[in-house]
Image 1 (cartoon, rainbow, N blue to C red):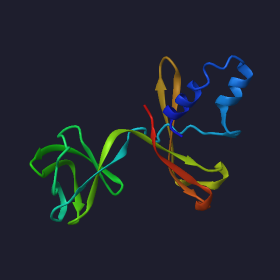
Image 2: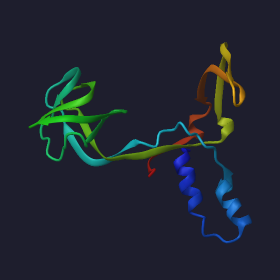
Image 3: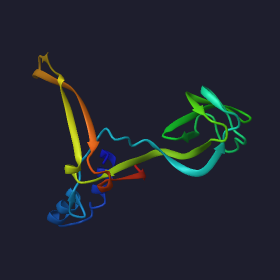
Image 4: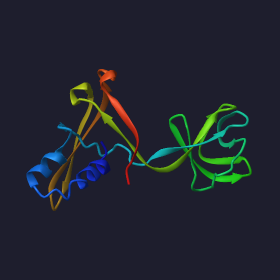
Length: 177
């Protein structure tokens, strides 16, 4: 899970007086160890029940027309379509200009985000993850830093897959901040 979620989880047990009990509570969830993944996003859109219907298909455009744009504020409203989120840059009646181009079929549903402080957590046994390194692309770079000595940078291509998808779950829309 993301670093923010781990910090929030550990803060739940700040009031536990016994340091041994507190240590056991903060190093596992229901007796299972967790892993920190700092690069997991903690700024995902948290969806609301408010939806907007596209009025006329668009192909790779930053402009989209919706049937009713009530409740949309330029500069602060985030809309989600599929797996992508779009910030509304400008609004003119029912015509919206988005921060990036997208393809929206006629009648498609855009969902308004309440906030962008959500995150996801992957729940699975670590042995269910397959991590592959491409050895042909591995590189080591040495950098001389006067006050430290040498700093070594390791670069490689890595891919991660889940071996048994039925044994993994993703929890969405957890509040992160």
